[in-house]
Amino acid sequence: MHKGRARAFTNIALIKYWGKKDETLILPMNNSLSLTLDAFYTETEVIFNETFTQDTFYLDGVLQDEKATKKISQFLDLVREIAKKNLYAQVTSENFVPTAAGLASSASGLAALAAASNEALKLQLSETDLSRLARRGSGSACRSIFGGFVEWEQGIDDHSSYATPLSSDHWEDDLAMLFVLVNDQQKDVSSRDGMYRTVTTSSFYPGWLADAPKDLATAKKAIQEKDFIALGEVTEANGLKMHGTTLAAVPPFTYWSPDSLKAMQAVRKLRADGINCYFTMDAGPNVKILVEKKNSKDVKKYLETLFDSSQLVCAYAGPGIEILK
Ligand code: FM0
Image 1: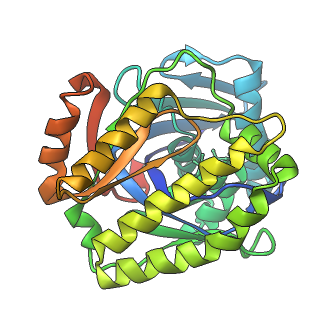
Image 2: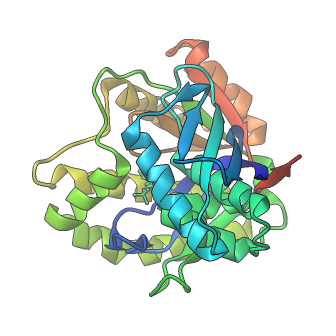
């Protein structure tokens, strides 16, 4: 029996990954940049055993169906290939997210599974190797191997596409990200399907691609200079551009709900009142607000006048993967 356990934290992109140039290897169309956060994480245990006759996957105590297990199995196939061992596994994952957040994260999940597999089979993969491996499970997972600010270099092949931590003199410790958890009845288009539809059909996609490298350079410069306004402005602008591409997809779609717009409006109002904060969104209706730690209480206080306090979660910068005993 070979057993490993690991924890990985979720990350939120400030410069988004949106579109693949290789669907199988999960190579992105552009570099992205994220902040790893402490508030949401996944703990995963993986056991490889000679006696197992198939892969099984438990998530939050519930045995998963064929479809959910298949994604895990395909990822484990990569691990088995590296290990040169043909053993089935039992994967047990727990997502630590606030109840009903709708934030079950593939980034923290696949990063934790990569790290737990490495431990179980004593593969001795470096963090860069783990980032490459996690990427094959879910693109954004390659960034969750590391803490703080992280850049995913798109690369041109499997070997050259991986994430690295950005040196920032610990500036991320002065920052916070406030989550506005928006309940929405509507079923989201998954990020995987959404970005595929956008790349293949949206006439706005070339505009996104033209701007992404400039936005990335602006964000990296802002981090170097600890310029919060510059980082916030480019984060908000880049997120809006990503969401703009979905409107021209065929068929068109949007991740925004009325409450997402309400949260965006609140951010603009706070800024007008002199509190610097900026929003971003991913493949769902939740809104994430980047703010300096010193202002996070004021932002939360104002949002509490508009949303239920159970919908608001304040996160700070988080660490990279952790091996659990
Ligand atoms: O995180 O198809 O990693 O940069 O969150 O599994 O590779 O779930 F929605 C925007 C994440 C996309 C932006 O995509 O896709 C970001 C997004 P996969 P992911």
